[in-house]
Length: 317
Figure 1 (cartoon, rainbow, N blue to C red):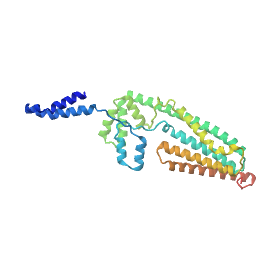
Figure 2 (cartoon, rainbow, N blue to C red):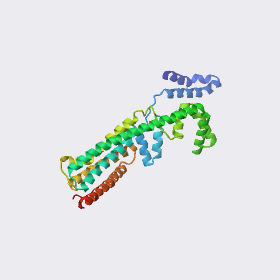
Figure 3 (cartoon, helix red, strand yellow):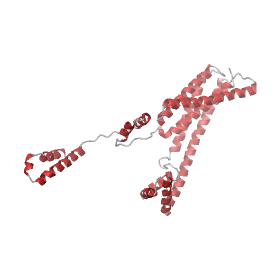
Figure 4 (cartoon, one colour):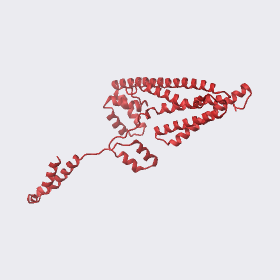
């Protein structure tokens, strides 16, 4: 096709054509313009996919031009990812695991207990709580999907038997969001042409339910497994220092356990910052502060209970 277009351009620029009728002369620019369009259309196009990280960086720097450059790319931006699907389970499970286990360690240290007590109660707490958290996440996820299925069945039945009533209801919802009546009606008339998509939108706009029953069929089990694994991994951090078979009360082993726990909290905060696109130093410090406060309370309670029982207020020192 390129050779044919080149031939047309050559013919359009050939001098003998100037002797033809004026009507032909007027057609030459248009013909050349159409030829140029064809040539341009035949040229290979390079597409660069939008980068989520670059868009986030432009937002963080307030760089409007960089943001526009990313959104000008034709390929769709890839949001989320495998890790972002499990942010809540990773962060919640890891945070609960490391803090509850460290609470056991701190309470035992405050009560002057030895490494045997720390490991027995620490491991028992980590495994039992991890199972409870993981299974609870699974059950809650299944309940959420069951609720979504029930509500979707009701909406589908109402659309089938009283679609005009649902249309009027959606118009009112959009009007409450600030849309003028005519715009709201035009919008609903468009989305209601496809009953399935109409129900999809109603599930979000009317009921606030954003669940894909088909894609999320195995979601609860995966979320529960991630919650369990995250709890176990981070829950073991405070116990590592006592695996050497030494330590009692407020000694250097407890100090080492505090340091390892702090490192685990910083890593968890960094993971949260990476997955959510937030500042990693800020999320890490927040996580460390949260764990420090919880550990301080646990240690204080251990000292208090030990004093009530034995009359010793030394805190195991």
